[in-house]
Structures are given as C-alpha cells and as structure tokens.
Image 1 (cartoon, rainbow, N blue to C red):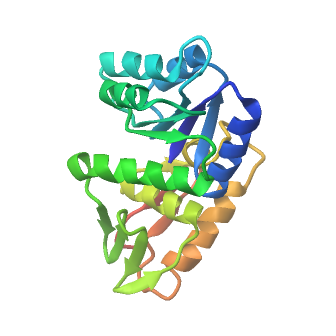
Image 2: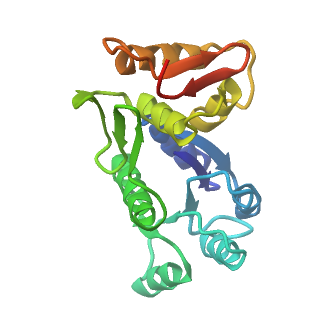
Length: 225
C-alpha cells in the first residue's frame, strides 16, 4: 500500500511510518492538514491515516473536503480520545474507521487492510492471475500450479503491482515510488535485488518464466516465453 500519514506529532508519525514501512508499505508524511489535503488530492494513495486534531485542517475537515470533491480514498482517523458523538460524526462524514491513541501499530495495519478488503468487495477482483500463477489478495497467499509460494510483505506487494500491470512495462522508478519512499535515485539497485529474489520464488523450478526484463526499460510480468 501507498499510505499518507497526516499528523503534526512528528515522533508519533515517524514511529508509525517506520512500522508501516517494515510491513512493506510506502509512506509519505504531512505535518498539517493543508499539506495533507494537497497531497491526498492527486489520488496516488491507497489509504490515509489522519490525526483528528491535525493543525490548520483537522482530520474531519480533510475527510469532508475529500468527499465533497468525490475522492473516496479510505481514511482512518486517529485521536488521543473522543466522545462517542465525535466518533459518530466523523464516521458519518466519511471516515472509514476511528482509532484511539495509544494503539498498536499491528492493529492499525490490520484495520487498514480490513478497510481495503471492504472497499475491494465492491470495486476490485480479490484474485489476480496470470498463466498458472494466482495471487489471493484476501488471504494474502500466492500459488503456482497449486504450490504455495511464501513471500515477504514487500515481495507480495511487488508481485501484486506487477500483476496489476500485467503485459505492461513497469519501470524501476514506478516500483521505487510505489513500494519505497524513493522518488528517483539512479544509483540504487534495491529494485533489481528484490526482483531477483521474487524471480527465485516465482519462476525457479517452473518451465515458463513469468517475470521478464525489458532491456533499458524495466520489467514485465506475462505468460509465455
């Protein structure tokens, strides 16, 4: 997932960002609501975690602005504490969930995944397939020819990204921006290293490779030679 955190509490935001990145997500940070709304408006995030008390624009105002503009990106609000009336108000305004601090990072990640699963039931196919490979987004599992393939979180997200762009060239820059917090660094080989590891798990031992290098451009997942 590509996630935006909107929170003026730098320590809390950085702690959460570290946990989300360790889980294989890409994270951007906004220190206040105005900056957060500006970043959220371009539609490149899978989910937003916003502080209810964010400065300049608070979490509720961010949600109201997004929903009024037709932006349905999932938003999870976090707050130091809130009355039932405020939680209800935020949920009715378009918040997808509301979490009270202090919280466990694992719980927040699980809530984000649950939000996306609920959204996916109406807008996306939970199974992604190409050839004899199947990725199940609901169970977070991968199988090829019926054989279960165990992937690390970032490997899973990389494979999911490739499958969503099956038959298309996926550049290293696209992968860096989607899976890491790197917008462009011509010196890094992190993408090549992870693709190599993914290939070892997805293609090794099978007759037909699925992940192909497009010389000078990037990578492509497709069935066939």
